[in-house]
Length: 209
Image (cartoon, rainbow, N blue to C red; front, side, top):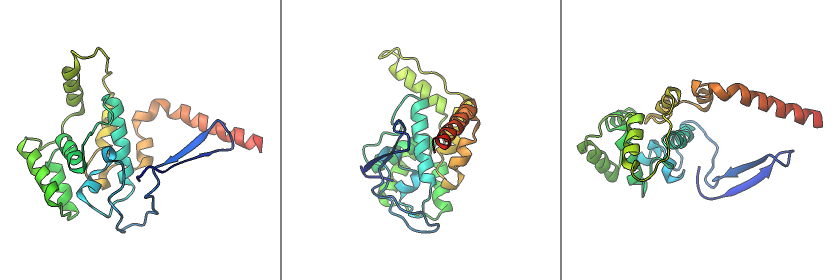
């Protein structure tokens, strides 16, 4: 969750700091409980927060992970750059479309406020009714900047694009959990190495006690 509180602590090894940030509105999660929607940094706010749905869960964090990933893969960070919460929601709708959004709102009996309804109608009039393909956004970016820079932007892998599709979805119940995301094929190339490093770290700690 949000605000600007930053705490730094260390593990037993001085060379392995652990930073805990933005915990000012942190809370214990209790299912079927209403929570404050004024959490999360604007560029990483999930749709349920922007609509004002108070019964959110850990899926808001997975949306944030998706925002970071799309920024890395498409070389635009932050990817959704809204000037305020309404503009932020508009940026999201322009990519994910209005059709799935309306299904989502109906499924959970959400009641969007006037500003949200206006931005949905505006995006629908612009023809942003269906989800855009990630690669089309990448190629659009390349075309816009081809005369400004020569920086090469690699084409994301199909695994990376598939992971994006499963993280950046309106319906929080359909987003991957953290465990499911870690098991995704996108991480196959590094999973064994990271697992080995974790085991090595634990062995070092055990041998030092």
